[in-house]
Image 1: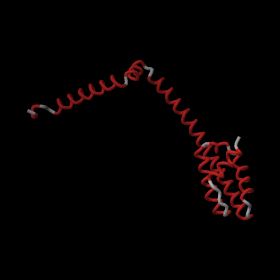
Image 2: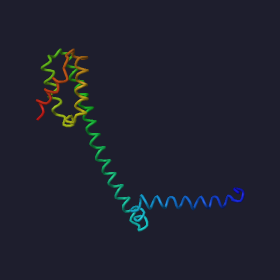
Image 3: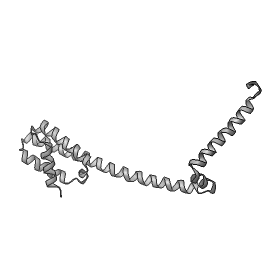
Image 4: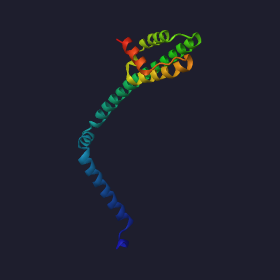
Length: 148
């Protein structure tokens, strides 16, 4: 029975079946896009979507890059302050006021993720360089008292 079907007939039937399948899928799920494609509006809709996507990506990239660069600059400043404080054997209160003065200039640190990163950096490096131990709650209280 299968010997009676030629390859030509098989591929023709397969092509018609696939075309019917995809037309049904397009008809069920992509009606509006298909109408826009046929009427010539597809290029306009596609260009608008691309422009919106580009604007959104630029906006999110700029914000995240600015905050990340600000975080790197802040960490570098804090590293310098902690290094000097370790050499000069600065007291805990003076070191805390220096840290808060530095952190008050950076607006991106109002975000919780960056704030946690900076607090963890201070906790780890203050004990390492200055042999001064801060608690996380102590830094949070000082920071919240300093911020407007």
